[in-house]
Amino acid sequence: MFDSLSEKLQRVFKNLRGEGKLTPENMEAALREIRVALLEADVHFKVVKQLIENIKVKAMGQEVMSSLTPGQQVIKIVRDELVEILGKHQSRIRTANEAPTVVMIVGLQGSGKTTSTAKLARHLFKASHNPLLVSVDVYRPAARDQLKILARDLKIPIYEGEPGNNIPLELAKGARREAIQTGKDFVLVDTAGRLHIDEDLMVELQTLKEALNPTEILFVADAMTGQDAVKSADEFHKRLGITGIVLTKMDGDARGGAALSIRQVTGQPLKFVGVGEKADALEAFHPERVASRILGMGDVLSLIEKVQEQVDTKNAEEMQRKLLDDEFTLADFRDQMKQLAKLGPLESLLGMMPNIGPMKQLKDVKVDPKEMTRVIAIIDSMTPHERSNHMVINGPRRRRIAKGSGTTVQEVNNLLKQYAQARKMMKSFTGGMGKGFLGKRLGKMKMPDLDSFLKGGGF
Image (cartoon, rainbow, N blue to C red):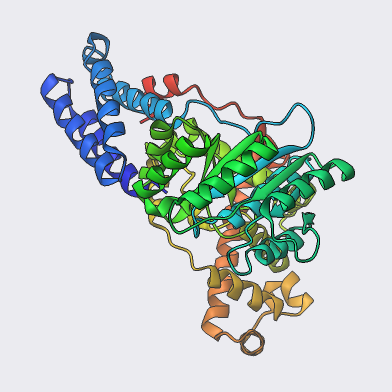
């Protein structure tokens, strides 16, 4: 996400930091490069024009030009302007004065609307809400079945209506009635889509809006379509009055033009981004964190939140005790691999790390998910005694383990080597931390003030 833009902007800033003094000439050259980087990232040309003008006015000021660290001052200005166009603050889902809160999910066919509806239901459930799902897409084959399957997998209730009822308005009204009767506080309405915007679609959506009086109308757009997503969102807003946007497939969009343009063009906030296919791959959109990631500062807060959501505190404390007492076994190593898999693709986690210092080398790391599965299979093929004491694994045992896991002896050898290295590294790390769970400490840490960080030479 934003990889291409981030790389180009960091190159511009590196050149600026190399200048002993900021002049109108080298500032103009930097602005030209920033403009090109944004346009190549598929950011809307009007947004680019406004952004460059704002940066120029502030960067050419006397305070910046005469500063001892002008390059860092410019980075701060660019970050502030990015936050401005992205929306300043996180925009949360609004709730109705009286339950249930009705949320209409709209968008073009193929944008990931149905999947996003289910992900949003899970997000609300995790936040202690009690959502009810309903699909009113009676046109696309198996659309309602798709949401039904997703709801079943997530164990979230869905309203299906009377058999043979294929009238969108009646289905939506029936879902709201059921929500009131059963104490549900949210009704998520997955609406029909088309391959393009047409009058019939808009009339149906407007009818649903008038009857349901939804608190939120969320437009789902495919980030991979770039400015087409922005154009569609704008048209839906003009006809329907959307209240927020969900951008899907952000994990596959290296440019990020849609995310940087959509709020400025539509005037509506980007509320969520889809970053994968799994049910938990929907993240609340934080403008200030995204701006930091674009500029290579990372997104440590989101990383901490992700870890705290997935990691069991008691298990983590027990794991740290084992590391400190030199009791970390292959079984523990396997369990840690499974925990890591829950956090999502490793590349995504590394993308949240600041792109500075030694961590800069991590951005090109590619991890094959099959490798993790292979490691777990090898450890599962060992006996409990072998897992608790890797030193007993001799040649014949390695051959047996390889055969049982469908791997080679060399792969078994590589795993044992990796385990020994990981054990040594983790022990040295935790040894310096003292007792107490690392996640707790991270959770209590206060993030440094960005202004102080920039002015203090953090870059």
